[in-house]
Length: 160
Image 1 (cartoon, rainbow, N blue to C red):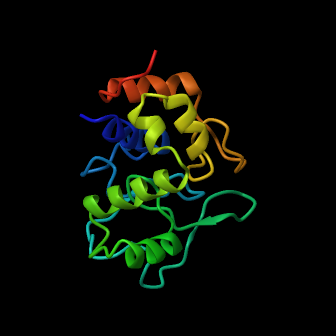
Image 2 (cartoon, helix red, strand yellow):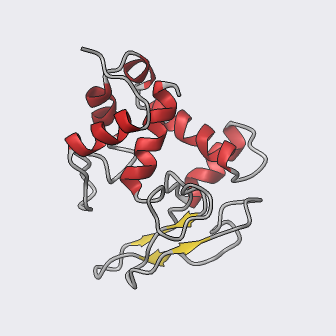
């Protein structure tokens, strides 16, 4: 497994999709939990689960709403943009991986990941994933040590 693959798995673990108790597809089928705290999955990968006008889910008592879906909890409006940019046919696992990889590239973290500088990559990417250490979305974040453990357990290597 490449460092990038391990980093993608780490994101899925951090977002809680890979470890979701009802996932049937390694987190690629998970919809954000709402305020009801109930898990939900989808089976139609032809488009984003919220693409056809489904209302966003309310995710907290302040009324914050989200359309986050898939392994990397990609928001529906981002999917629309990246579907066009990357010429994606659907919201399949392959398409989700391509979007997440593009987001990592936009954060300037690909070289850090390839070089095993995972702490640097995590901090560069925390503007895209609210669960990563240091993210400033006011949501629960994961400890850096837990993220690094997840990355290494997924086969990633860290530079000395």
